[in-house]
Length: 459
Ligand SMILES: Cc1cc2nc3c(=O)[nH]c(=O)nc-3n(C[C@H](O)[C@H](O)[C@H](O)COP(=O)(O)OP(=O)(O)OC[C@H]3O[C@@H](n4cnc5c(N)ncnc54)[C@H](O)[C@@H]3O)c2cc1C
Image 1 (cartoon, rainbow, N blue to C red):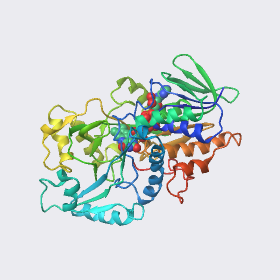
Image 2: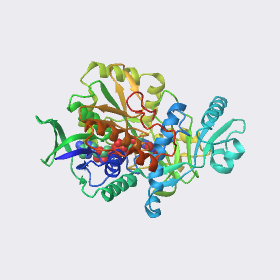
Image 3: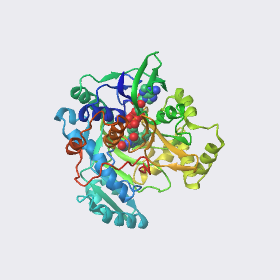
Image 4: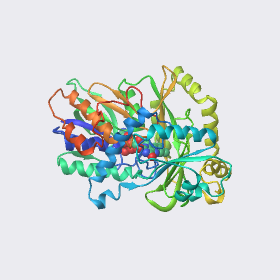
């Protein structure tokens, strides 16, 4: 019999495994993963943008969210910095970040944001045309001289290989608690409660694993498990796939643009890929695709099970959200990017905002890259729910973790560990102070805030 079973070995599930193994005295912990390795779905290096989102360049985060997200995300950087150099160098990459504003309105927006952000990021720089050109020459080359431009620039930005991070969490969890159990190639089929108030986790191999507490860290699949057990009936998911393109190296660091506030995702940006030297990766796009796992059409049945499309109120919510003119035209445009030949031309308009001289022959689709950005919908209010979500049940938690879920994976693990302690009613201890001392950069940071329940981060 287990104390805690975690379902899903992406950044979220493995961060929780690491936290339980390193900072608690919980005895029997296991993690179950359907693939043969950790980090093979949204945490895979090729499936996300590899950005440690701290709030410096994400113009859709309110300043209050930045204050929360910065120390939360830096826990991942602190973890990586504590590792031996050869391991750290596969996980954390010092990568400068810039958000670019073009035109009078965006210049004003970023001027104001700079003042608000400076107390949080004292090294943040406000740059104009000449200084941008010194750091990112291709952003200025060929740009209309009358166009006002501004950039906020953080030289201390990070990129993260979240796939390697997941593997590292598993390795160090095993070092810190040798008897944890790791089940790979083990797909959970059903979770049920038995008459002894224990959970029985049934796998497709026919195994039944008993446990007191379950944490479902299966990202896009978590809602499907919640619904199977009668939780989260009022939620649905809008399935948005994010794909990428490559060019030769055009940027030295990450360059984002000012985001349209009605859209729940970051606008197209350019990033050095931590695994592909001398190239720049562009994207992600945002295409409606009714699956839970990118490029895996077998997961469309799981999407239908999660989405609640048999309910009228789900359709009403989808119509209200998707027919908003800004979102509708954005999604239609993104569908057109898939068309052969014309697609590249249309996508190019986004890249031109950053690299004015780019030509369609310079860009190619990054085949096999991209993940699913499932956006939660509250079908009672017909509203889109931004960022992460958590459904709290009886000795069970279901985590839904769109961006910046990977960045804040250790913070979420900390919050879930506190909740797990409540489930066990004092039977086990969590050394929160030691975890904070090891991983939290800011003494004033209140680790008791639960961001995913009341509001969620804007992703
Ligand atoms: C295009 C794109 C760009 C992104 N960019 C960023 C970024 O730059 N920075 C950032 O912080 N975040 C980014 N994100 C979000 C980030 O990828 C996710 O927040 C993060 O990977 C979620 O981690 P996870 O462990 O919760 O989920 P996943 O990594 O998806 O892990 C879930 C795991 O559950 C397993 N699983 C599912 N069902 C079962 C089952 N039945 N049985 C057993 N195992 C199961 C899966 O195999 C998988 O390993 C991006 C996402 C996308 C799609």
